[in-house]
Image (cartoon, rainbow, N blue to C red; front, top):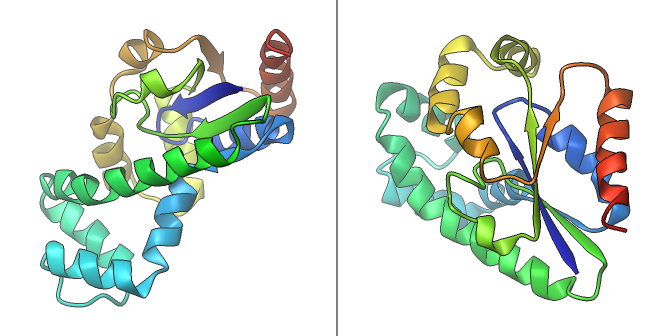
Length: 187
């Protein structure tokens, strides 16, 4: 089994890269796990209580607002969510232990010091202005982009912990070719 981590800066193209590589084996997405958590009533109640948010309905919007008002709020949120995501990641590894490749899309892989879990790490990168444009196209704004982007290590620091750096500033066909050329080396 080759455990391949996929990481990168905000709106660099991690999800697109993950979908391309996901054809080669099962894919774990940290963002999908977080989305699934937020869909559970029990989790929403727990988060509301722990983070002193008055309502558990429309929780994501309320959490975003709290982050905008108090940057330290992010750390409190991560202390709750990250262990739950890590637990799901371990289950995923056990479930797919007989596969040749298993892929993990984890935005904060390096920041969370998860490198030891992976045999190979791909770092997807793009220029900041292009990432901001992509983020805004998905409905984000400059302020939230800046808050999330500052949470991440610089591309230079992240790249030091990764085996492959893939620049994603062109089109999807170029990204696909680059990724598949690299993965062939492991087949």
